[in-house]
Amino acid sequence: MKKNIVLVGFMGSGKTSVGKRLSMTIRREFIDMDDFIEKREGMTVNEIFSQKGEPYFRGLERELCTRFAAGGGKVIATGGGVIKDSGNVENLKKGGIIFYLKCTPEKIADNLKYDNTRPLLAVEDKTAKIIEMMREREPFYNACRDVEIDVSNKEIDQTVSEILEYMKNINTEEEK
Image (cartoon, rainbow, N blue to C red):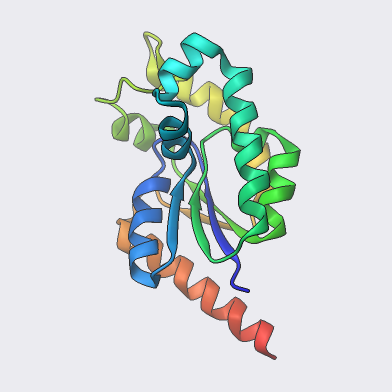
């Protein structure tokens, strides 16, 4: 069974963009966890946070991590905070390889400068909030990742190529 390719990283690091391109390139199903939750709940992540609360949203993430751990061969873009739950990480690792798309706070702030859909960044100083949240989450990303790719100055295709190269090497090792 093919392993899932799991993309983790801070919001705005390119998980969805990289995941879509990667899934088209290798013809695998792509799942964006936030989009999946929005479709299922019939509301945006922002609305879920404001109407049902963050704990409810995190419960939905937990459920999906368990569900997607069972099947293989997918490209999965996780929500930015999914790694804060060790059970999520354990489930994602069961059937997949976790790629941490690392990005500088400045690049993330630039990527998200026109994005008002992120409930945790609905503050006056987005950059300061990004730095604060990244400091908190960095140890989680480092602990869960199998591979780290700095995407701060990379195009999507460069990141996809790095992931494919790593997967090719893994598949070669597994065949031995």
